[in-house]
Image 1 (spheres, rainbow, N blue to C red):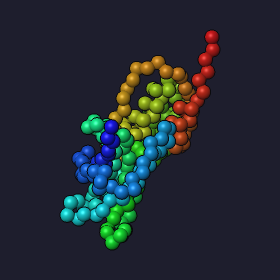
Image 2: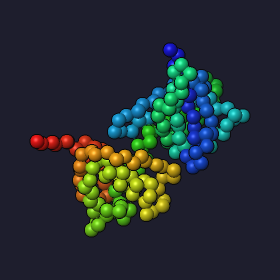
Image 3: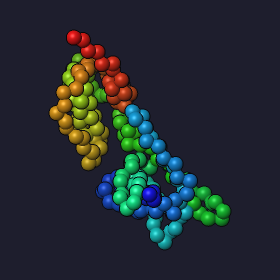
Image 4: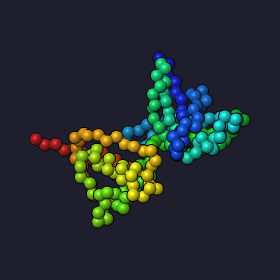
Length: 193
């Protein structure tokens, strides 16, 4: 079984693929995907001004999509956001070192804001429902359909599931949204018969 990979850089505003790097074009690629945390990626590529404008391709917050090929089957492994680029010279060749973070970083950039929440009353946000519904309400109110349009992430969607999951509740304000998601997902499940 032969395994290979490619990295696609996608414009975060238009969704257009800006450039595709084969495994051979990348050096020192390291990436991780973490459950309930933020993964990371780093790699180096040679600068080829005739093929692409590196400042446009590696603009902050462009998507880095990593695809794995196994026996001609292409599967998206994970997506990241460009967060840093550094131009340097390695072995007399102009090189770009790229660093990125997992998409959960978008959640980490938000604070639970009472003014932007459907359930914000009396200076607090209060929710009590199934864990899935609570996380859905929070994502909609703070990432997708916020009353402050500058807080919305264009083209972000979430799947609405009709699952009967455990009930959680909280009352809070001005907490980091990612930390709140982690706290809610870590609540112990108590059952009794």
